[in-house]
Amino acid sequence: MSRYIGPACKLCRRESQKLYLKGEKCFTKCTLERRPNPPGQHGRARRLSEYGTQLREKQKAKRFYGVGERQFRNYFARAAKARGETGKALLIYLERRLDNVVYRAGFAQSRAEARQIVGHGHIEVNGRKVDIPSYLVSAGDEIKLRPRALKMERFKAMAETLKGHNVPAWMSLDPENWKVTILRLPERDEVDAPVDERLIVELYSK
Image (cartoon, rainbow, N blue to C red; front, top):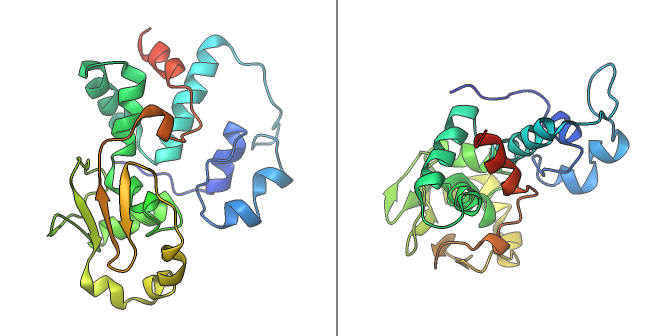
């Protein structure tokens, strides 16, 4: 699967909204605040058509969670078959991704860093190593940092800040053991993704 490796701040500028792709830098040295115009030589805000608005909302959701086009389409196809509203089901699928859960738990400063942590085999789910960032967690799952990772400097430095980290209501954090438990699946109002999922549904319904 192709992966975007360009400047993350350019994605926020393109969407004219903070997507919090670079962790702490987004709160201290945000490029969007200094350069609010879209990237490019003629970076001026353009008037969008209905289709353009829907497309930008889909792109925003993809970039916020760090997934590719084919993967996003697969999530939408699964959401369309699920009970209830398709848009809500889509966001809940994205929120259940293991890399997102690792980020929400405070084990990483950004989803990109969380994806790297998972990919390098530092996370175990229910006692078994899982190195697939797109793994979908379920209610009752226990996600934990593996013992060998606790010896790494990056995690030693985060130990104190983890104790004061607030997690969403659908999970429970044990900072002493670097463990998070999924209490239940998230509700739509607990997902802080800055997207209007109805526009995404309208786009794929054309």
